Amino acid sequence: MDHSGKKTNRREFINKCYRYSVAVGVTGLVGGLTNKIVAKDTVWQLDPTKCTQCGKCATNCVMTPSAIKCIHVYDMCGYCDLCGGYFRPNSKELTTGAENQLCPTGAIKRKYVEDPFFQYEIDEELCIGCGICVKGCGAFGNGSLQLQVNHDLCKNCNQCTVATACPSNAFTRVPADEPYLFTGYKKQ
Image 1 (tube, rainbow, N blue to C red):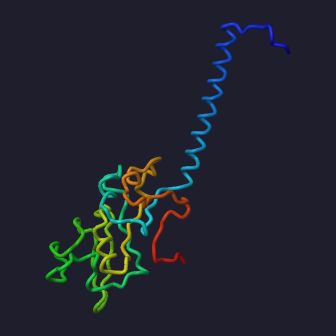
Image 2: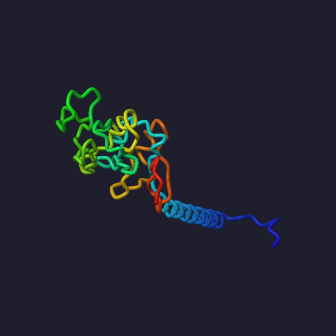
């Protein structure tokens, strides 16, 4: 077809523009849906090797309380009588009194096993994800307390507000079929 002498009238021009805009819109919609499908295959998670226990997990999560919780990696724990994640530094007594506990909400429960060993459990409903116990465990213990995103609570936001506030860039997307990252622990 030779279009050299033919002028496009206004109606044809508007029809072509309409068709192009519909094509671009459909392409954008398909691309957006594809991104959402891909995002469902991954979830947000905190890398404990990068975490600085800054406390922003407790205050920046869209969930109240935060979906970031303390996890106790039992395989790493020494079941110490003097747990750095449980007791305040310079505690006068090793009792379960609130004045001796490091956790501001009392989320860590201590249970006697045998002399001199104790078992520590995290009450997820009380945990706010502040990381104070994790910092204490890492400073005076073996690092068996770690922060992780609890995927039963997390909304898996497209852009995680905690991830954007994290000063150490410890948040990343991980495969949904392996959603947890622990340090010093090998999955069996």
